[in-house]
Every structure is written in C-alpha cells, then in structure tokens.
Length: 394
Ligand code: PLP
Image (spheres, rainbow, N blue to C red):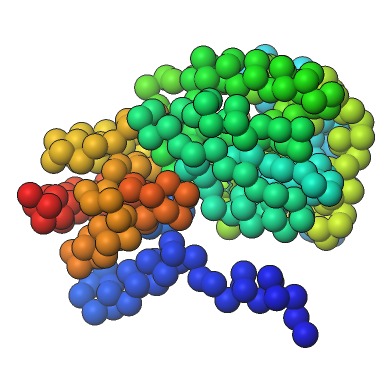
C-alpha cells in the first residue's frame, strides 16, 4: 500500500539519534551534568548577534507581506547578488547572482544536484568516511551509490581505490572538506591530483564527471589552513553550501547551490537544478532567512571555540594513547576505537555515560566519531571517562 522503501527509511532510527535519545533518558536519571554527549553535530556556539539583530530589524522595518512572501524559485535576485559578491571577495572569483540557487540547507543542495544529474544507470561516488545521508539522497534518485574506502592513515583520498571505481557510468564525485566525520581538510595536493584524474577520465569516457563539493564546514578551519575553492581547480564543480554550521543556524534551513558559467553545459545545468528544485517541491528557500544570510554574508559564529575544543580533546586523547588523525576543521574527532568492533567499544563508552558514534555509520569501521561542538567545560569533565575507557583495554 505504501512505498516499501519509504516505510523502511522512515521506520529505521539513525544510530546517532538512538544514542542522543539514550543520553536524554540517562540525563533524566543521573543529571545532565553527568552525561558526556558527543553524539550530535549541532553547533553549540550561538549565531553571532548580528543574526538576531538583522532578524529583528527586518521584522520591524520591512513590509511583512513582502518579507514573508514567496521569492522567485531560485531565490531573491538581490540576495543572490549579495551572496555572490561575498563569495567573490573571499575567493577572488567572478560569480553573479545568476550562478546561485538558494536552497533549504546543504541537504537540499545535495538532493537538488543529485536529482539534476541522475539518469538511468548513473553512479555517484563518495569517499569513506562520509555523511550517511549521501547514500539515501543518491538512491532516492534511482542512481547507484559507490564508495571509495577510506585511507585511514591520512583520511585524504584513497586514489588507488578511486581509480578502480571510476567508470563510464560515473556521473559525479562528492567531496566534503572539512570533513564530517574525520575533520580532515583535503590538501591542495589532493585536490590537484583528484581533478587531474577526473579530467583524464572525463576525456576518456567522452562526458564530464562532475564534482559536487559539499561544504557546510568551509569556514570552520583551524591554524590558518586553507580550504581550496574547487571551482578554481575544476570547472565542472557544483558547490553545495549551507549556513547551518558557519552561522550556527541549522534549524533555519538555508544554503545554496552554485553553478559556475565555466561548467560544461552550464545553462542546462542551472536549468536542471531549478527543475530538480521544482520536482522536489522546495518552491523557494525561506524568504526571511534568504534576507538574513545575505545581510550577514561573510560573517561567522565564534569559530575559535571549536579550535579550543579540538586542541583540548585532541591533546588529551592522544596523551591517553588514543590514535587519531589531527583534524584541521569542522568539529569532529575520528579516533580509532580501542577494539576492532566500534559498536562494542561505544557500548563500553556508554557504560561510562560517554556517548560516541561508531564509525560504521560513516562506512568506516574501527573508528568512532566525537562531535566536540559542545561546551568546553563538558569536555574537561569528560576526560576522566575517556581515561577509564582506555584503562578497560590495558
Ligand atoms: N553535509 C554534511 C557533511 C553534513 O555534516 C551535514 C549536516 O550535518 C549536511 C551536509 C547537511 O547540512 P544542512 O543542515 O545544511 O542541510
């Protein structure tokens, strides 16, 4: 009677949600201060004051019917122009509002790109570890989702495996840097090597392999590390951006897709993005928040907090002999679990009220994700539990 796949997707709770709910139940029993919940990637740093000031000003001063009304499907023209100018200031690019399509966050940006591209028999490739919704989004279009296993020494790209997986069926490759869950930023060397391979294979197969750059964490990068802007390296790049993390507003659902003019078939690509948005029923991105992000473009919440948390947690855990690639961005640490079965390891952690997520959820067994977008003092209080957990394996 109902679409079987949808019933299954809607009934299966995500492991991350399960852990989060467990944390809430335990908090009711033993007190919130005794639970060390590192399960969710919900930014704990508040949106900068300018966000609330802008909301208040717009609501007080603007015509309510226009402010809350539909915008054009691709987003308000002035909003898109302002955002394009801010991207150009940051990256030395030359985009205009016509290159942008406003969306309901990065998840929608990705869905729109997959839908815009997917034709029968197509494959989309992602690199483990990856944001688990990619698989759901790609398979939702009827296309096939292919995974390049992780290079667990560096969490850069496993090129040997990628070379095997690319084929004439590959429509696009998805990259996410800074990465959820590894926190790794792909180096310029990695990007140059990736685009060289994609150009060679595009030529060989006689059609472009598109790059989809999922970048909700772009601004969350530490120690001055540069996150390469991919349209500067590869014309056939869709940028999927979101303000969920940079401005700490994941619940407000706002982001965009950027389609460069230099892309092969750019006009059709942009039309396909608009068409995909129609089919998916997005109508337009939230009108008030289009205005808010355009007026706050280029600003971020206080990212220094995440760097402090990274330094504290990475320093403490590596001192306890947890092994971990040092993250340069986002707000996740992805150490090896202290036994091969990350689920069993997370169960032991749970017995200490330490809530971690098994790497299997990101297609990378033997690791755990620690989301450190939490209060620094909770990290300080949690260190004893991490120590006890390590001692269980001595
Ligand atoms: N992509 C990655 C890698 C993410 O981690 C997330 C959210 O956590 C998303 C996409 C979805 O972001 P949004 O809230 O903007 O839809």
